Image (cartoon, rainbow, N blue to C red; front, side, top):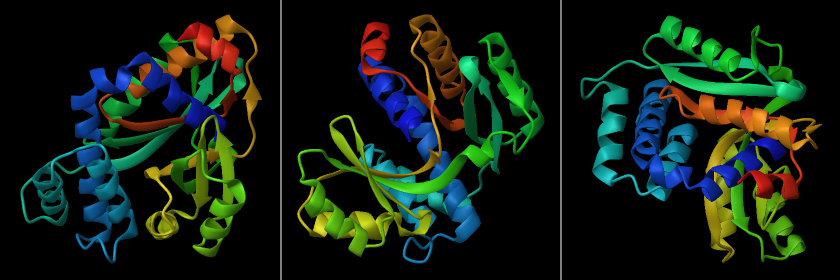
Length: 248
């Protein structure tokens, strides 16, 4: 979890989220469309669609834009067919990197992702080379001022697996299909939820204590994350806060 949660924090500090708002909208709409294509357009019977639908709303994507994406996914409206795939590789320092992609041309995207790894000091790996170091999870991010015991009691009762402290927030981890039910239970208990999403949780981390190496790792993450077809980038790095502050 460390690498992904810290990467999200870094992007926020750098203002990348504001600069790339249009790009973020495009990625979220793709995620909604593919979820609808794979599991149907009913949010009540398609937990992945419900999660992606709410994620888009949390990021202020207009409701009619989301609804059109659902209709493209179900075939009610014409649209491009996107394929869900992933790529694996390494950043400097032996950091494992897992890249989630939605593409309409796998050959083109694969070539471009390989080039981004290589140009930024990393390397592409064969399928399965690093995937075993991550578990697919749902994550509900909650206000960090809430007491651990109070939140734990609600979260576990709703089906969560674990509770992790990430800086000034709590990350409640669960099985992907349980993400929205866990979110609903936490909100029903009166606790403030920042977001709910699907993630890849690293099962172990690689500590990066050298500033230049940390910068090289973050360069790989940023280059991949900026690609239009990349939906999310996960890594198992653990960079101390003081180094992150100096780089940002």
